[in-house]
Length: 67
Image 1 (cartoon, rainbow, N blue to C red):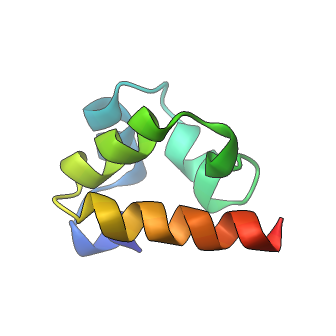
Image 2: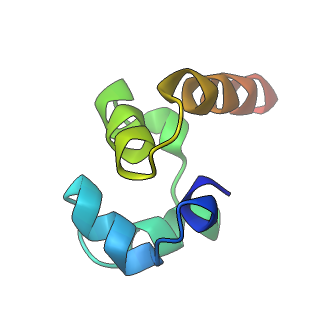
């Protein structure tokens, strides 16, 4: 949702956050759980998508409740 709102391709976001190509596609497919990654990754994604870090962290918090 944040990536598409920022008009970034998965590859562009991978590069922006310093991850291997295919990482964001794995996240979006549900193969990678961002809750398991450090908060810095979430902050990098928020910065790269020009999104609110608080909003992204809230989404991750809600996701952790479902886990």
